[in-house]
Image 1: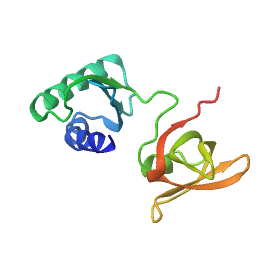
Image 2: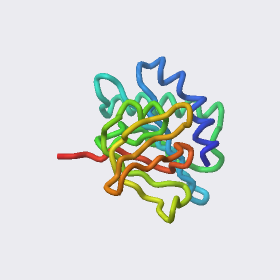
Image 3: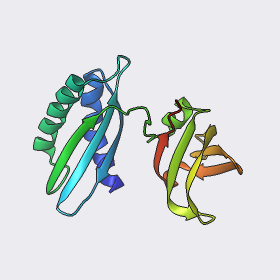
Amino acid sequence: MAKIADKIEELINPVIADMGYELVGIDYIASGKHSTVRVYIDSDKGIGLDDCEVVSRQISAIFDVEDPVSGQYNLEVSSPGIERPLFHIGHYQRFLGHDVKLRLLRPMNGQRKFNGAIGSVSEVNNSVELVTELGPVTLDIDMIEKANLIAHF
């Protein structure tokens, strides 16, 4: 599934950047015959409904030509929101010190879910150190299935 998201990102990222937006990431959720492609965009000015509509129309046009998703699918374009998803190593670097919740693809020492602050990021090792209640934990970014910032009010 990640391969489909990567292919979609490759197709749409240049167009979204040319439109003045940042492609934050893509969630591809396969669900039988009907999948969901969720695209997160951002900009310095924030994201409104009109932004989502214009980007959605552009992505739909690209999908009509390139057909990266077989079968039926829903396309959703959205802002990352306050519990922003983290997709790439640059996201972890950008939010160094912030609290995150994440889930691994496979358990590490019997645990798949972790909460803590991003303590450090290593591009060399492609890893992130999470400072948890039980101490620091180093996680390979490729092993992270889903990660989101934790909103504090």
